[in-house]
Amino acid sequence: MRKVDKVVLAYSGGLDTSVILKWLIETYSCEVITFSADIGQGEELDTVEENARKTGASKVYIENLQEIFVKDYVFPAFRANAIYEGQYLLGTSLARPLIAKRQVEIAAEQGADAVSHGATGKGNDQVRFELSYLAMQPDIKIIAPWREWDLNSRTILMDFAKKHGINVPTTHAKPYSTDANLLHISYEGGVLEDPWHSPPEDMFTRTASFKDACDESEIIEISFENGDPTAINGKKLTPAKLLTELNRLGGKHGIGRRDIVENRFVGMKSRGVYETPGGTILREAHMAIESITMDREVMHLRDSLVPKYSELVYYGFWFAPEMELLQKMIDDTQKNVSGDVKIELYKGNSRVLGRRSEYSCYREDFATFEDDDVYSQQDAEGFIKLNALRLRIKKMMEKS
Image (cartoon, rainbow, N blue to C red; front, side, top):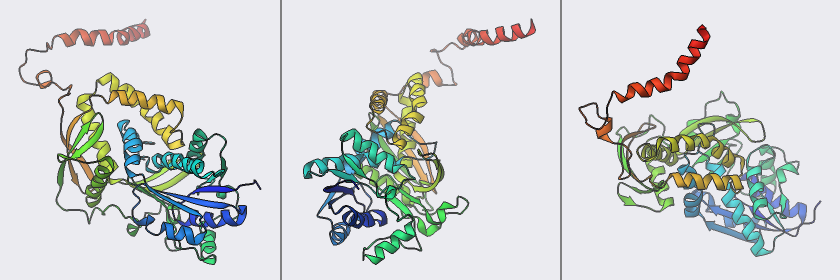
């Protein structure tokens, strides 16, 4: 057993980290400081300080990082149209480096020699947390209880919590592992471990079902400046408030549910169910404003890098040098991505109705099917023949 004096624990107040707090004190006989980041998870933090202190925390940090989360983590990823395996909008992946960074900073402030997290030895979060810790502080000690203890199931954890009088939100009836922030909420475990089992309707908390969603569609306008959303219906909002409003709008229209079987970094497949109402609308709108403001070849080159960018975020390499390089290049593509997008929300769908920008590359006088004097259609003949030259030669060689 390593000698540890003081630990900063990433503490959500959920089942895993509540048990871990008690376990660290008992196992390492050390002082434990908890850190809880308010990144928009809602009411979960209401009782965090009380529960942490009752369970034995010597100090409790609770910090509102919502604006930092959206401005410095969510918006950069959405400038890249990041999406993992074509479906996952990276809600948990984007939050982990922010939490880990602040954790290491608190450890330095408090003279702690170790940090700890509640990620399991099977999942992606252990990698995301620890790569970020080590990028920030190369010699920090890391305690990952799920890789050390014998409390090897959520049922056993719930029994441990009950035995020690620890108040946790998880029950045997709803044993989901959830993660929530301003971008999304995720659900794993329980009945969801069977990929054929449909998620129960009472599990969802952010989006209305299609049948209960508004019967009337709603049309909104989202304004962008340099790739970032700045206003809804002409009203300027801070990053966190803007995403909060998109979540409200998307939620009541049933937008943003995803049921995914994804490939974890550690090598196994995992089933997760997600609600990302605001993010779903935002990605649709961002791609729409890009469609009229970005050069074709710049867009195609950027698009070719989206899978790699998304993979780096998902795997936990937010602070890696290749990620920094990619972000700089992507941000450079966004210089003229400014304007407005008109989008309709209805029964689980967000549909683009229009887009406009003073930086638009779209020229109606070139694209028109009516008479024009800016484009000679005869020029297309030579263009086609030159592009067909290698195809003609290939066929001629086959015949010879």
